[in-house]
Image 1 (cartoon, rainbow, N blue to C red):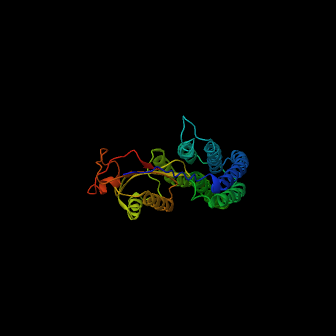
Image 2 (tube, rainbow, N blue to C red):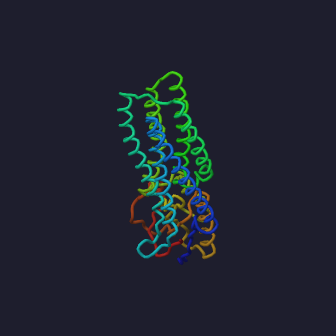
Image 3 (cartoon, one colour):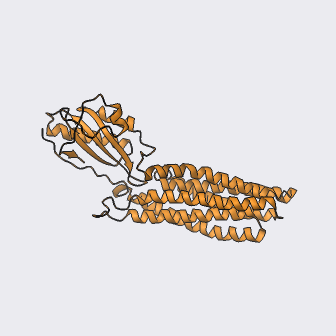
Length: 330
């Protein structure tokens, strides 16, 4: 049987989608600048007015700025071409950036939480109206930034994290405005640390999913938008494919997914049929949000010596065994 190697390397961020990455870069720069300016104003106002809720929100916004800068750095490294030492380039840095951002936010939650407990025991008098005015500015800044990020949140994990942070900040600013008005009207100064705890809760909730997903991708786990069982089933529905096993899917970056799979075909497969199967398999994986693939073509007569190394292989253990041949479709 003669198999012919061919290559499928469809780079998501290059070519047609490079302008999308450029837009993400510009939006991240704009978001970082707007939020940094607001951090300076909010922190200064919080210290002047002795408002821990403002200081807490400013600290969180500062971490958001740092997160945006880290994401920008990751996107910059994404452009570096692969080399002999890093054959995938530095694409993985986008995933590491998302993980680092989540960890930074968790550390921030802990630090501000400790200070909030101290302030709750001895709440000082606070100028509620002034606090509401400053927080009102935050609604505009964070709301605008969240709106800018909203369009791209489903295309990149870092953009999703940025959107969640900005949207949460806008909600927190709304809560601070309300608490400021209540403090001004009823002198409920204990409400300031309570709102701070609410801020921390929102941050923690919005960060948790980001942490789980970035940690999953850092460990080469299957991306959330890819169902391996459904993917395997659809590949096995391609005419001429007898079995698909040893399916591995992982994220090369927050923008690109990759796949390797063993595909069992008839031993008498012609070159034309092999090419047709390859194209149909590529169409299937594109629909499943996978941009890079390597298919190892096998025959039913070959014996697999690698064991069941993935879910798909375990579920198809009754199918003909397979073994790698020197021929691959990439």
